[in-house]
Image 1 (cartoon, rainbow, N blue to C red):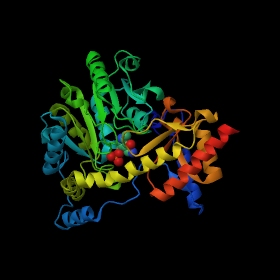
Image 2: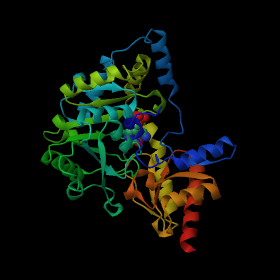
Image 3: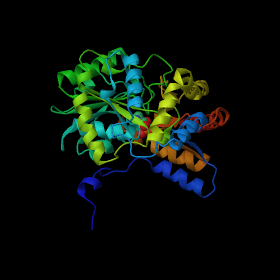
Image 4: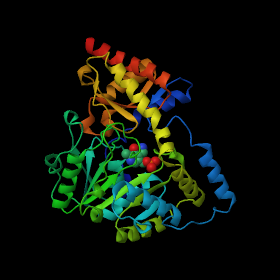
Length: 391
Ligand code: PMP
């Protein structure tokens, strides 16, 4: 028996982009000490007070089936948070809780696209974007951005999308580039989807990690709330990656349809997790700044180290927990460099090519290990790359 064409097509013809990561995990399993700068996960675990809230909620009985669309109090709190950030009237009826932002990305594409529709996304992109779009039955179309334009899409870039495309997926603060879209980029995005009468899916899971400028949600622009779905999550903002707690914010009729989808897939999120999330959100911005602070520090450390290596450059990230390093002067692809670095120095990074064509010749370095170890590994990496340039 063979699996369906549909499920076989999810990863397309090519790889899933995680080979270097799998190699590094295999080396670790053999007992080799590998410095992992690959995956977007904090080096701290979920705060014990959030776990206490989770435990208390479970002991108090929040272990049965939960409401499919999410706990009313959590939906209210998320709606209020979004309204206070964006100014757009938002109520619990606009919010549906999902097991992580990833499930929200899938739900949003299922809601936006019919089978065979074209769903546009920006390149470089988070590795699951094309597979999520294919899983929803649509065809991904990548819009290339340029390093010299800080990886921001312009109206003209967006206009490369085929006529009839149904949705545009954007992500600011961005993984992998760390770019935070400014008002001009947001205007171009909103104008483009309005001119083409498309859905906008805005992945804002890094909205609490901004180092320069400020986070702008496109849902805030005039008439955008009716065509925008916002994807959010507590994974990055509250170091709750394993809890799988996210949401989609959308027009009410779309939330009703996503509710039908969720009824046939996840059937809701564990209530004790949702109540822990409610508690976590109640800890306020000070807690969120505390979670973000290490990435801000390590970004500074990396930028300082880069000053010593004239041929190794970066577009300084304005947000998120990564740094894209431009290695094009080495003449190597990001993938070749990442493989050599893993072999020779036991440092694992993600090749830029895992995130699309626009990131070729780059690597993504996650700022996710303690400062001293990070500084040492990053200096080793830069010196290795500079050595290749110098021949
Ligand atoms: N969007 C982006 C851009 C991400 O980087 C991630 C996770 N790395 C997600 C969505 C999904 O996050 P989660 O499912 O943990 O909320």
